[in-house]
Amino acid sequence: MKFQDYIESNHTFMLGKPVIKGTRITVELILKKLSEGASTSQLIDMYPSLNNDKINACLAYASDVISNELILQD
Image (cartoon, rainbow, N blue to C red; front, side, top):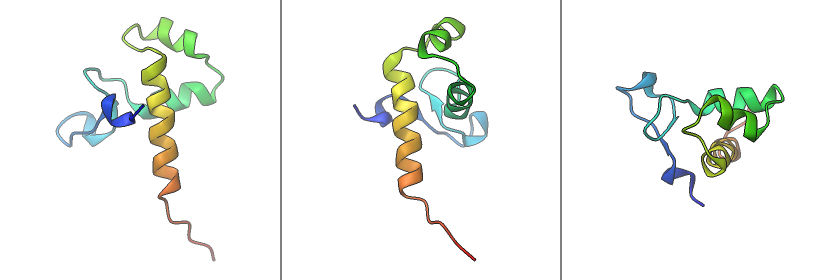
């Protein structure tokens, strides 16, 4: 699965934040809800346009961003 199939970012939409394609649901929101303990089935109940593939795409996106991040240390 490629997260690019499910996630897009456009500077004219939602301030350029990455969102699930065709929605206003940000990757940030999905990650926040998961970190707060929400299950994937709860997320799908809250946001019926989501599915497991789209949620997994958010996790893949976050992993890709973190793996390319440069960490500066004092």
